Length: 277
Ligand code: NAD
Image (cartoon, rainbow, N blue to C red; front, side, top):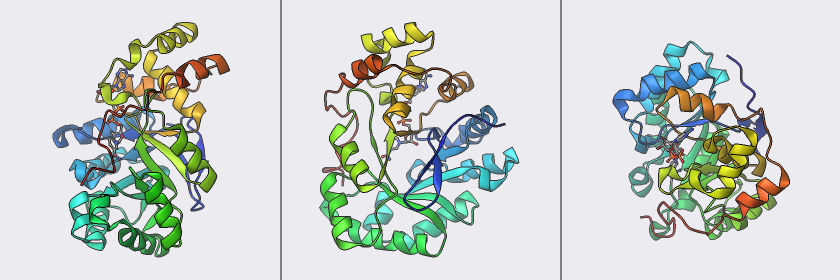
């Protein structure tokens, strides 16, 4: 099944479908079915992590779908304990094995863990995975500007993406501008606020949903896409998966975009990368 998701170029020379499907906190016993549904509905970009304990179930769904491997973009991430133990090569090899893949489309350092001061060393290891083709692109997650600046100063590769918490009350304008300046794509995790606040009830979201006759979640995803973010919403419900993918038939106007931009409160709902260790 084809879909209308645009592919956007990465600084590695590869490209990424701008809208994908995340599998954080999808129970391993349900992951295969959920991912099979997501692929069947039309998603071609899957976001997992070693820390989600469901890479092998994602693999089973990919195999069961019969979709050619090259048509599916797969991201996975280095788990924090493997990062701390500097078991980076071992962890990457096990991810390839669990996912049943010869290459990963995008491999990310899950968290910078600045208290351990290992992320520069770790990034140099990821550079070798890109060099030997086992990772088509490499990137980071939850990196703050000073962490990115150190990679620029001490290594040879600019991350293709930085996957960070990003949703209307935490829209990260400064970090997005920094990414833009350096050719890094911004990928939004928790794009729907992880259900941790009443995002869908906020008046600008409600008003845009009513104006376009769509669901509030679709307005939020459309705002992400028009902002230029890569988004990876998660849902266990096939109906919502389809709804979240069906966001290419309408466009928010400038006033609607501005009203959602104005919701920013610089307020995280998840962990602060400076402190996560
Ligand atoms: P999310 O913002 O995607 O929110 C998911 C919640 O929204 C679920 O409770 C779901 O029921 C609800 N939802 C989904 N579609 C809906 C719809 N159409 N209408 C109403 N409710 C809807 O949160 P998330 O899953 O945490 O983030 C998305 C993905 O980002 C994850 O699955 C994971 O792949 C990734 N992620 C990465 C990190 C990281 O540190 N890199 C951290 C968290 C998540």
